[in-house]
Image 1 (cartoon, helix red, strand yellow):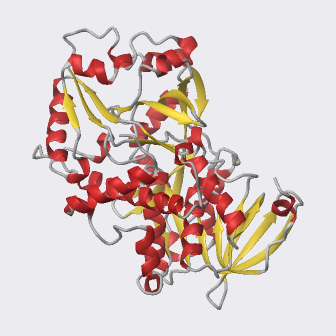
Image 2 (image 1 turned 60 degrees about the vertical axis):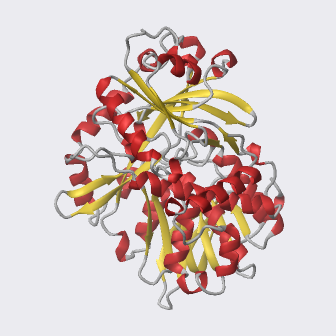
Amino acid sequence: MSQSLTNRTPKPKYDVVLIGGGIMSATLATLLHEFDPNLEIAIFERLGRFAKESTAAWNNAGTGHSAFCELNYTPEKPDGTIDISKAESIAEQFEISKQFWSYLITKGYIQRPKDFINSCPHMSLVFGEKDAEYLKKRHQKMSESVLFKGMEFSTDHGKLQEWIPLIMRKRNASEVMAATKMDLGTDVNFGTLTRKMGRHLLEDSNVEVFLYHEVKDIDPKEDGTWEMKVKDRIHNHKQEVEADFVFIGAGGYALPLLDSSDIKESEGYGGFPVSGEWLVSHNQELVEKHQAKVYTQATVDAPPMSVPHLDLRIIDGEKALLFGPFAGFSTKFLKEGSYLDLPESVNTKNIRSLFGAWWHNIPLTKYLIQQVAMTKAQRIQHLREFIKDAKEEDWELKVAGQRVQIIKKDEKNGGKLEFGTEVVVNKKGTIASLLGASPGASTAVYAMLNVLEKCFPEKLHGEWKDKLMEMIPSYGQKLADNPELTEKMRNYTKEKLELEY
């Protein structure tokens, strides 16, 4: 690490301060710098490297979330029809991410796309007559949308043997199984992508990056700006830094920072930390027999983020298999956080929300307790629902990232647990925060454009418009309504990102 990153002192005032060195802050900093290279921007990251928490490769599943395989995005309505509106929305958001990354490649800001994105088929797999019927209806409905064109469906064991030979080993020929397959799927190393963007910002822009610097508090000033207490964790030095606009992209720590800002919009928010563990195999003989990401249905009372899946991962050029996630629990809000994070987050403004969410999610609490108590042998038993002859010695346990599920105020129940990604912005548009988990990193570009739309609307649709259209050619248009544009954009990003579907 260069001296300049550890010995510099932040200026007393910036136009923009971004808190956190994950994919959200890196994306927003890159967007803002492209729109206005004269903006004085600072990024404060409490650890010694970009992307060490939720964005790190092994701290998430690396699924380029396009709603190709995630069954919780396509619920069955009471009348038996399948609602694909959320799936279409998430698919469009990932297309926006691909366009932005393609722009970065075109400009030479980042190189070698295979370092961070690779083609990997996305599959849904279900067992039994009832779920097979649901998957068939889902396939029929999704096939009507241009965004899911090319999705295949099969219940034939011979076809499934071609698609997922490792899962089909030792299967009973009479077992009812159904799967869909989408070759446009991707595996993404968000950590590598973030560090590539971070390197560009460090070397080719005037964005200032401060590692080992932690923002401890955010206070509003009378003139509408923000004052932050920033701690240099290497030299144990504290100083105050002002900014006109603040973005909190600090993962699990976004919640307490947002609360410290005292904006009305943060009232009632609470956080419930959930950690996870994966079973990981580097046995290349197994890897060769499983070249896809395969998602199935969540078990009863499990949160959507706990949908079991068996995935191909490609990290630093090496292929591995990942199975899980198994839920864990820690009172930390970040992997490298404090055990006091959860108790210290409770206050008079959110205690009703927290209690209400807990009371109405007691089955979830039981589920988490059961998951935490599981031995490795019990986890292997779950894996054997996918791989009949899985051997314990081929798999190791790896701790995933720490997530903080949002708890929101709810008039009826006091509070409710939210499982998506949410942007919170104050009325003046001078502070914004990203809360929540999946689909998270996949939709980072959409989320950060959402921040800009709420906080800089005149500029985004005025002087920044041409640059915006250069970066995101489909901006403002709905791909689901435009087959020609969808094909054009997908061909463009396929070429730029060197995808092989």
